[in-house]
Image (cartoon, rainbow, N blue to C red; front, top):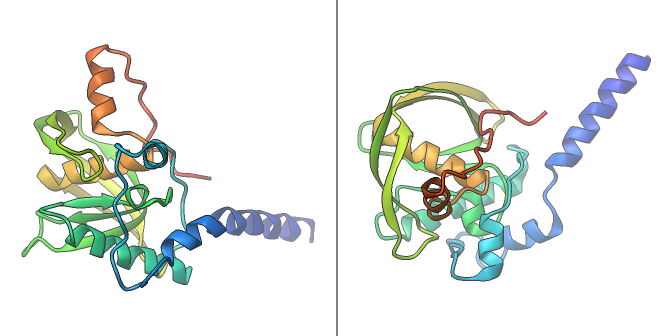
Length: 205
């Protein structure tokens, strides 16, 4: 009985941690819920603060999660050639991303909830990156050529897959957003050799 009560307490704590705040619900459900959400910009101090904040996991089966996922896709489609977007870019510090899958036929857009990089290759590629939240910024960055991902869908089903090439770069870029890492700040800190790495491979307990 004691063990059962402990497990129930742990589950209740987990469920509470996943619960969306009133402010998050307000952002997700603002205006027409079938429309795109505005993309946050570093040029706005309050929005910049959100972009620099750590994101937490989200309950995949919460109906509001489905609304957020849908509106994020519309936000990405409304851009001029964007290939990925993370929830902080629409004002929600939760772990959801959309990625254009250049490694699949017809380059479909796919969403990923609570994504975690389990492994990445030491072999890296150098390539250009821009960001929907950072106006007129573009630079060259090193990214692992191959990564292994774990994530869930809106039903809570867990998946794991290996991704490589340009699609792997997009995943790494978007997951950086979930840890408050912006490529503009990253480049500046790397120049001074003072960039503090964030453990993007640690799944929340």
